[in-house]
Amino acid sequence: MGEFKLSAFGDEINSDLNTQMDVLDQHGIKYIEMRGVNGKLLVYYSLGEVKEIKKQLDEGGFKISAIGSPLGKIKITDDFEPHLELFKHTLEIAKIMECKYIRMFSFFIPHGEEPLRYRDEVIRRWKSFIKAAEGSGVVLLHENESGIYGDIPERCLDLFQSLNCDYVKGIFDFANFVQCDVKNYPDAFELLQDHIDYIHIKDAVYHDHHVVPAGKGEGNIREILMELKNRGYVGFLSLEPHLWDYSDFSLLEADSPGLDLPEGEAKRFAVAVQALKNILNDIDQIE
Image (tube, rainbow, N blue to C red; front, side):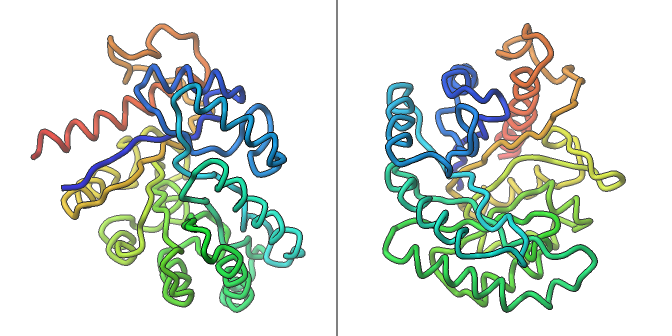
């Protein structure tokens, strides 16, 4: 059977790292997918500054599940060379952080244009990433994201098969596929299952694409997590709540660390944690 390890985007709680760690500690989560920290994206810190952040993490007993980078989240028509240099810098950050994964994207396609027109350039750029990462031990995780080349399962699969690299793997983001009007289960999951190495937990609904707590949308999170567990998936479930304006706190139970908090990001994060734990508890009971 599979084994799930919980992680989270701490910057959706607060920009301050100590606050992030305090809240995550209360929820029993000891991994962070680090995107923003202390008011800036991690990839824009100097290596010396990254070492200081690593000290903070070590003192708090935290590890990094992935670097939540913005790499590949520029227009396919933008200059690539500065972006490649940022990638090489991020590889050095991963080494300092003792982190196996870097979250990445496959470039925004000009609005209204056919993505296949830019396929060759997307592949060329990703091959440059692969070459730069060779021998580093880092796995490059492609996240499905609305508006990029790999926004739908078929083009994600095209990337994985065309690159044919054992250190290029996929993130399965439930909400992002819903926002592209993709049917997650069984369609997207069955197509991509052999390439999935990491999971983002957020859910959404089809009619207006807004994000909701896990299991409250149409992303088929429960079904897919059950499949993953049965198939022996061992890896991270990384909470990326995106509950910016959410105000229904009825999910919170008496023992939730967020129950008595004032309305804000820490309380919304508590809702996201509770929703995921409810699903995981259901799966355990099914067994």
